[in-house]
Length: 286
Image (cartoon, rainbow, N blue to C red; front, side, top):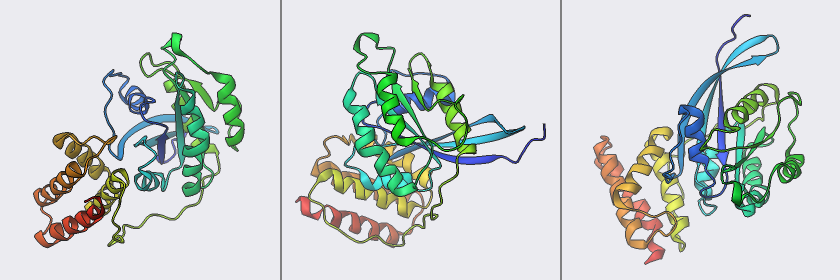
C-alpha cells in the first residue's frame, strides 16, 4: 500500500468533573493508569499517532487530544478548547447517571454550537466498579441516536463501556473515532485569531472570574499548549482550588501569572498591563 501524507486531527474530551477523562487519555497515550486524580486547569493537550486504514491506503493519523475542564462554570475556557475540533470523546461515569444526562443537556450542545456537526464517540467509564454500575449500552444507545455520524460503517461502533483502570474499551474507542475522523464529512469552521485585547468585565462569581483570567492568560501567552500546562502548575503551586476559588487566592493567582510572564521574558509594560486587566476582572469580588 502507498502511504499517504500524515493527517492531523484535533479531538476534545468532554464530560463532568471526575468522570475519568484524564485517566482515559493517560491509558490511551501511555497505556498506564494512575489512581490519583490530577486536576485539569483549563485544558491539557497530548498527542498520539496511529495507523488507520482509509479505503485501500494506510494513513498515519495524529490525534491532538484536548482534555477540557469538567466544570460547567468555565465556559470561556471550554469554548476556546472547542474551536477547531474535528471530533469528540464524550465521557460519562457509569456510577453517576447524571453524568450521562449532562452530556445530552450540556456538553454535546455546547460543543456543536462552536464546531458544527463533528463525530462524537461515547465512553461510559469506570465499569471496573461492577457493584456500582447504574447504566450501560441501552442508555448509551439512546443518546447515540441523537448524534449519529454520517460516513464510515457499522463495524465501527459509536459507544463503548470503558475502564481507564483495566484498559477495557479504551483503545477500541479511540480507534473507532479515528475511523470516523477520516470518513465523516469535516465541519467547516473559522480559524481562531488571538485577540489583541479582551473587553474588561468585572465578575461577581469567582468561578467566572477565574474562567476569564485563564482564557486571558492563554490569549496573551501566544502558545496555547504551553500556557495550559503553566496554568495547571501555577494553580498547584499556590494551592488554588477550582471548586471553591476564594477572592484572596484569585488575587494571588493573577500575581503568580504576572511573575511567570516576567520569567518568560515578557516586557515589563506588557506584564503590568496584563496584571492590571486581570485585577480589574476581580474588582467586583471586593
